[in-house]
Length: 129
Image (cartoon, rainbow, N blue to C red):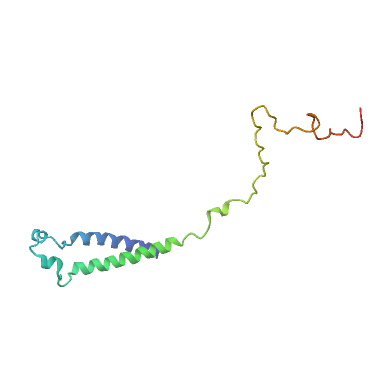
């Protein structure tokens, strides 16, 4: 079914190109460009030719096959490309600490104990020296 639709589409496309190239333009006369036959250029054209009717029919068929093919190929993919990716949690990283400020100052604020650290020394299991 799909192959037949593609073949019809390509055939109608080529036929439409050849039919349009075979037609004679509206202002084909040189006198029409300078106003010599202004009634035929802007007035009624009379009966439509066979080539005009074939052009309209092939244009309609071309549009219908184009829309049908677009609809068929548009809903063809129902699977996601992300289905093959495994769900692995992202590694947890520690936040970066800001760099120490320059200018002779230390990164830790001074304490009230005269420059010593405010944190008590680590205990060594209850033994004292």
